[in-house]
Image (tube, rainbow, N blue to C red; front, side, top):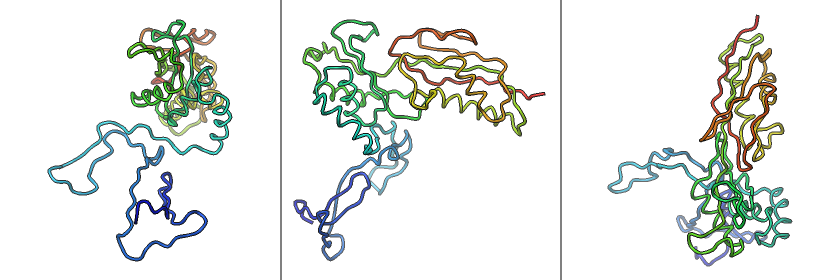
Length: 299
């Protein structure tokens, strides 16, 4: 049909085609192969594919034997819910798309890419992680079920472009002299080592797998924590929290010994019951390490 003839609409989220104007229907013209529509949609999170998922062509192509995707897809995001719109709209009306306060930077960053799960602004934080007037650092975390969600270069560029359009000119400077930094958090791996005494159970190996999964879920940066809302920036878990997770696993009788190890690129620190977690910089976010659980049968 005529591309200028607006007698149809395409829902890019659902992939449905509606004929008419929403009030009055329209009958497609008679015949076959006389309507052609082209559009792009990612399918939200379900449309995201890992590296190597593409294995064949939709149709034959001369001189091409095979295809694959060397990198995982990026940028997938589900449609924004009505609740999210209701939460975002008042903030957008308040800041009027001007990045002035911390909350403005965080709101504009999230609006720049729906794939973001978190955005946290630190005024005065420079690339070395030290406080220096004139800098603004925005930490971003993509929505992901991976243990360590790291923003891609494309996502960082997308958020940087969105913020640059609304940030003060003093932050942008000349080429190479920008003082607006968008990056991922400084991650700290948390590894749990514990001796777990099992109660009546059919399989110690299954119990180990269940307990390990529970710890990994508790230590996930976006969906872990006591309330399941993720971990705050600049906060490390305590021994008692991980102890409680293990004791709450079905078929666990009790935990005899436990220690937590915090590992960064530069240092490692281990704590035991009664010891406090070390202080960390405000840009730190935890993620689950590879836990070592010794499951023993009860007497």
